[in-house]
Length: 321
Image (cartoon, rainbow, N blue to C red; front, side, top):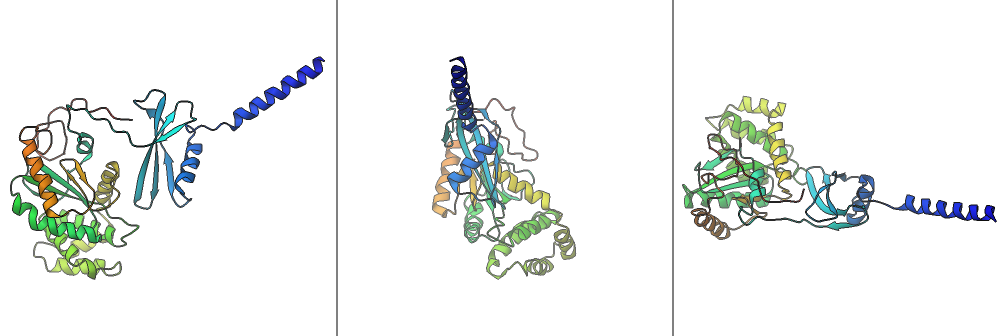
């Protein structure tokens, strides 16, 4: 009898242990990665990274971010995971403080130091564009901005250009981005001549002729040394500068070009001039009293503009971390 009872208890414990061993937890990174790969059909060509769990404002849940990348393409997938690891909730949960600008998070991540710019320092509206010289939509947006922006707003807007070449789609965009920074190093004003020229000649440029075309253009510019430009391109001397822009874009979850930020407000597509103008007009009027964005706000936002005095930064709005 005792032998039978002992065997029964042993079998029960063995089954219980087996059941526990089969229980999966989304707080285990390998388990979470496998689950998300299956959910979104991500094969091994896609690199997947799972973040460490972080606190969330939801009782009983932690936040885990799954990052997927393929070349320069990148996307973050936010999840809430129950503290026992059994349940996951997909979604991006954003909290706002009505005493703060709703775009504070974006404004804090917009790093404009060292970026080519045009317009008026200290303007009430700051526009930051992430762009790709080979992107046809970026070409259209560039034409709209260059034709209209400063003509309509000679004092009220400061515009910054950031590199975000989409290498998986545009094979010569990265080379063009590196070259633009080489031009900017030599002569900041020449950057805009390069910007206008390369967008204008976009259809004539190929991966095989991009360097030759750029050097040929540089020889026609009185304020540039074409040999110095060629050396800069060959050595990829501006790689870190382009990589920084790309990293800044990833921090802001930029995944397409052109993407504009107008006083932190994301505009993630090419937009016609009437639409842009309505947003800018609204911001100019709003900042007269709000003074919580733009370079003249004296607010909490750090746009990293050389010579611009910044106020101390108080606690920002609550966010899921």
